[in-house]
Length: 153
Image 1 (cartoon, one colour):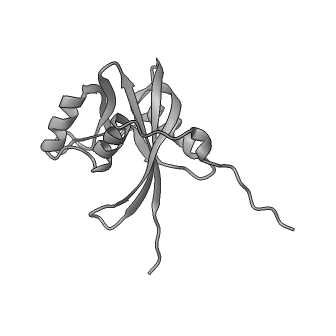
Image 2: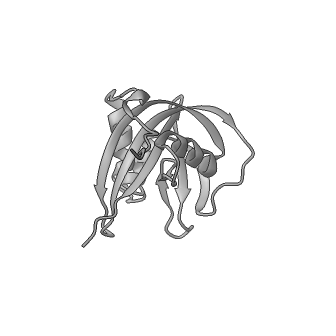
Image 3: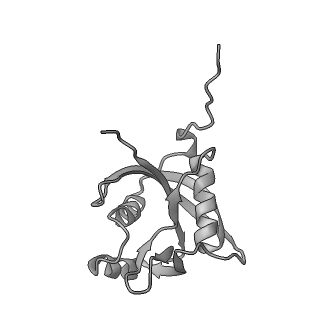
């Protein structure tokens, strides 16, 4: 049996007392998540986070720090390694959102907690990222060393 983990990113974007969240799935079973997604081939984690945020919310952001790296064994049998970043909103752009995104919302922590209680968060990683940020957990972006290439000798 081979192991094929999914490597993903997520952006925690806060403005005032509200967090930028995405509503995804279908209208009958929609869930809420931070802007997040897979790292594409040839892309760094930082680039992926900026791209996913723009595609899912229409917002350009600046990444400020790494909140944490999370390993999640999902009920579907997949294992996800998620890089969770803090970001500041820079500019909302006119942009068509990804097809699986219903809408982007600025939600309060109370609203997000209510969705958690109702079982409407995408995964436990959503609240863990928020809680770690609220606890002050932060690491410099320079902690991630990307762009190494194997050279033939």
